[in-house]
Amino acid sequence: MLALLRNEKVRGILYQLITIVGFVALIMYVAQNTAHNIESRGIKSGLDFLNTTAGFDITETPIAFSPMSTHWDVFKVGLSNTLIISFVGIILTSILGLIIGIARLSSNWLISRMAAGYIEIFRNLPILLQILFWYNIVLAALPSARNSLNFFDHIFLNKKGLFVPNPVFEDGSWLMGAALILAFILGYFINKWAAKRHDETGQEFPVILVGLALVILLPLLAYFISGSPMHFDYPEASRFGFKGGKTFTPEFLALLFALTIYTATFIAEAIRSGIEAVAKGQKEAATSLGLTPSQSLKLVVLPQAVRISIPPIINQYLNLAKNSSLAAAVGYPELVTVFAGTSLNITGQALEIIGITMLTYLIISLLVSAILNWFNKKMKIKER
Image 1 (cartoon, rainbow, N blue to C red):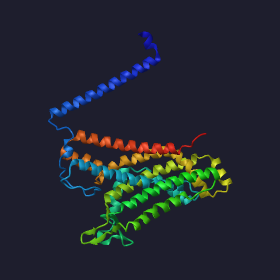
Image 2: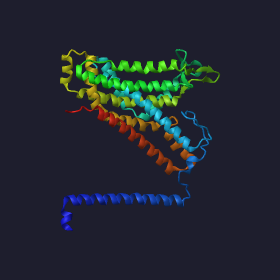
Image 3: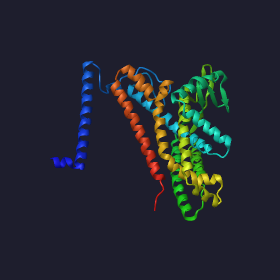
Image 4: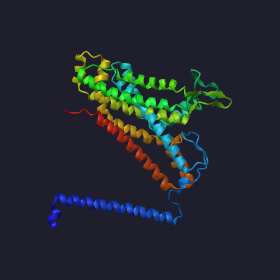
């Protein structure tokens, strides 16, 4: 026995078993203690509350909802709004971060200093404070509905939000969706063909322009073939504001602006560090081949910089999704606000609701991480 304990490998396995047993025992103790306290205090437990009537309304919902809907519907509304703000925020912060990151390294002194100033200011201000700044100061200073800012007579901006045309799809519009999917599939195969052609001949092919043409022209062709099954519902001024169209509330706009501007500072720094990590010889080789600075950036520098920048960018995407829970500060009806807030106060099912909310954010984070790790793996340089 003593001889076995002197074996380093055996001791390592033994320590791990002791740790696992201790951890499981702790979890069982906490679970039993929690169950006992819940029972002794007469607190209801279980998930039956999800099928009870919510009894309150939600003003901003992408799915049908009324006070007669259930708390499960509340969860679906909150989750939908969380996914919407996260998806739109990731797209916008990626674009803004890329622009600021490149501008940070510009040879133009003014552009470089402005980009640096943007990063230093917004990166060092708490995200919650920025949400409140956009909501209580910037958007609150907008004119009333009667004096709305008018863009092209179809887009209006005022204290009540942003009003834009809303597409209305009718019978036959599925053909446009199918055409859009077909455009993406064709774009994927064209990109593979162009990459193979470039490796064999060195000739470039305008993949982006062709892809954009497919995405625009194929759905447009399907639109005319299927008899124009889509039209726009335009916002119109009424006695009490605007009717029709699509409304983006001040709560949504404040959260989106703050998340985008704040997270873009970290993505810009990741892009900048990725560009600076590209070997100087790569840039000199591009210049010696006769490439212009823009061609060198697009064809040589950025493809290598993106590979380096992806891991820290993944973390920022995850932070953006989790920071969306701060919407409770301005009342945007995302998951924490309506489900872990209002529903919890009505039902009192704190343990179940907080557990479901935590599990939901964990799943969202793991899915985003898995997708981006797959993309990171695809972007790695394949060694021979």
